[in-house]
Image 1 (cartoon, rainbow, N blue to C red):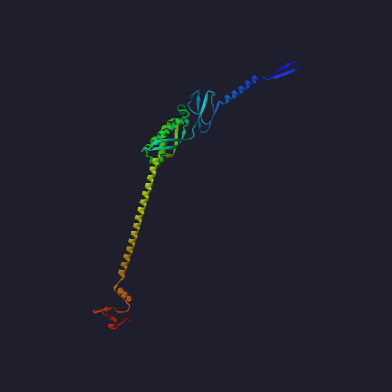
Image 2: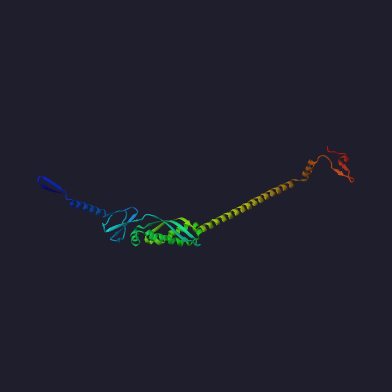
Length: 280
């Protein structure tokens, strides 16, 4: 600020140019300060790039100094990441199989710098997606379309193994693969439904046949048991029928009258009246 005296008046004026310079210097100093540090969030690593050249090694979680305007830090996410892939392949019986997969993978912290140096930040589309398509096609070709449905676990395990074989050297590790959906052609689905209906009808007929056989066997066994029981009862009865018992049965059933005999001329002779005897 300068003061000028003109007679009885005093004029005060600010040095605006100097103030602007000081302000600009302060702002520049703040920019330098903020660009001299970087913060790496939890679950991430920092890849340092110095004038376009990737430095070997990575920065771990926390605050780190860096050369302002000279160095840049690229943050790589090392947590498990989920990728959904829609792809199509052909089965062993040449059926088109559209598949939706959920891939869980992570980036190895120690190899973050080499992955970024050799592939770049878009490693998911450059490496992971093509590998998923290639491995899935190879595995799907080993199974028929129908087997693909019944062997989902085997296919998932095969995908995990095949993807790790292709990606581990690059620093990518697949932890899990989930098959969300299998989709087949309308003709194939119709054929499967018809096959299932035929199998159900065959199973129903077989069940009814088996039930009829079981019922017949049960009835035959019941008759056999009944016949055996009857035979045993008759045997017991026969063994109990002595001459005295038979004679007693005759006496119990006699009505006290002697039998009548028909003569040669058709006359009926009452033996009781002839003998003059009657049951008392």
